[in-house]
Length: 350
Image 1: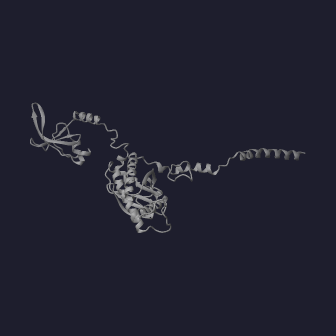
Image 2 (image 1 turned 180 degrees about the vertical axis):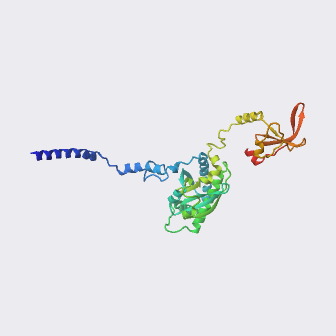
Image 3 (image 1 turned 135 degrees about the vertical axis):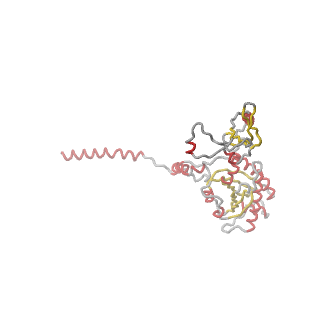
């Protein structure tokens, strides 16, 4: 009886220990694939360049930390209008150009995301002393070739995969890119005069490296539609290229003065002209050992290397301003100004 009682108590205690674990496993909830993707920030249906959330947003937080350039959006809106007109004249067809997005991206990430085959045009901004990248996808390449060589309307351009672009195709695309670069010059003209010139054409993204992989860049996606034909083109400008005109691009509108107030400037100039300052007249300067200076006593005389005809230098806070000669007016010692001292770069920095 004693053994049976002990076994019964052991089974009861064991049942009490198992019950919480069993209840916990029953209460666990397994996440489905959609919830896992949402948690990690992955979305297969969305574009790679869209804003991300979740763990991926934390990993790529440096990607969207670049400053916004409001005036650049106005420049590219102007570019779209200019391209619509110039490409209509270039192709003699009904062309519609639309701006899809303006985003920030690392240069290395962009090179890895270019869908091949494509033609990459490296262009140079003369006044900015740097380079930019222009990418034309295969759909637009074959559409331009088809339009310029007299392809029939209503038929989509024929794509031939697995072969490099011919000389004729590259030449026609180069002519289109030169037209677009001329429009870019006109788009930037109201803001700052910039000349864009084609440097070279590449088909391998590795040979189109114009910046370090981690450098930030502005990516502008454009779509060109010619009735039932067309394609995409992308413009990449590194932030280093735009740095010389960065202050102009930060403007909210053309000609913004960043809080500059002409009334305050005139008031400040008036007050400066009426400001009283102290001017020191330097008769002579000597270099003496420190022990001699420490041994000076009351009554001793220090001889100055100056005579009645020596020129006196007048300074304000150590900055030399004027030169003149010493004299007397009534009971006051005076200095007659003879000439002004030309300020050097060193004196300007004081």
